[in-house]
Image (cartoon, rainbow, N blue to C red):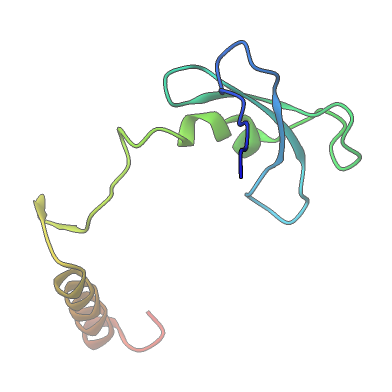
Amino acid sequence: MNLHVPALTPEAAPVRTTCPYCGVGCGVLARPDGQGGASVAGDPQHPANFGRLCSKGSALGETLSLDDRVLHPEIAGRRASWGEALDAVAEGFRRTIAAHGPDS
């Protein structure tokens, strides 16, 4: 099988896609910025949004970079295992319920 996949460069045509945030399914035009991110605009031909995007959809391009994302659980600023993190959350819930009741 010999597939030709065009390079996604800043000069590439925008990619038509759908905003993932809510159930409306707004049309999005994403254009790669050449640095791992993309510029995002509403798709004026899409019948759900006619080119308009809400604040979440407009910021979609800012979510593509991994630089500022938390990729592993942390407890008090140190990396923790998922089990340790879940235990810490469960203990926090137990303390809160003990102190403030089951509806807290």
